[in-house]
Amino acid sequence: MIGKGSSISSTLGALRYGNNPDKEAEQVYSHLIVGDTAEEITREFEAVQHLNQNCERNTLSFILSPTVNDGAKMNNKDLSELTKTFIQQMKLEERQAVAYVHRDKEHTHVHLYVNRIDLSGKAYKDSFIGKQSQWAAERTAKQMGI
Image (cartoon, rainbow, N blue to C red):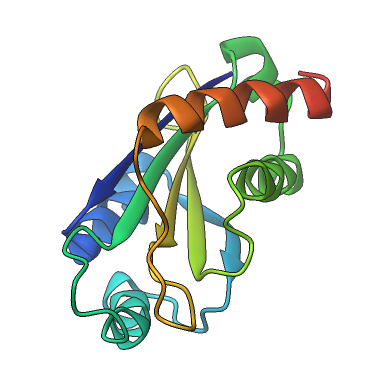
C-alpha cells in the first residue's frame, strides 16, 4: 500500500475534489464532523483552526492506495477500517477528519483530510509528513494483512 501526505492551505478545494461525484466518490470515514458538503465541513474545520492563528497550512491531506488487487476486493467498510487504522498509526485520532474513496481509476484509493489543529488549538507537527505517511501506510497494510 502507498501512503502520501502533505499539509495544505486550501481545505475547501481539497474537500471538493475528494467529494467529487465525477470520481465516483463516496464518504467512507468521518470523525468529529456533522456536515455533508465540502462547504459545511470546511466551516467546521475553520472553526477549530481559528484556535491557532499561527498555522497557515492547517489541513493534512493524505492519499491511501492499496494495491490494485487489494483495492478491488475492499468494500467501503474495509476502506473505513483501513482509514481508521492509518489515522491511529499517524496519531491523529482526536482530530476532525473525513475520507472519500475514489473508484474512477483501476486502483481504488482513499482521499483523507484531517484538521491539523486539534480541539485545544495545538498544531500537529508536520515535519517529514510525506515519509511519516509512507511508514504509517506500510504498518497499516501489515496490520490489516494486505
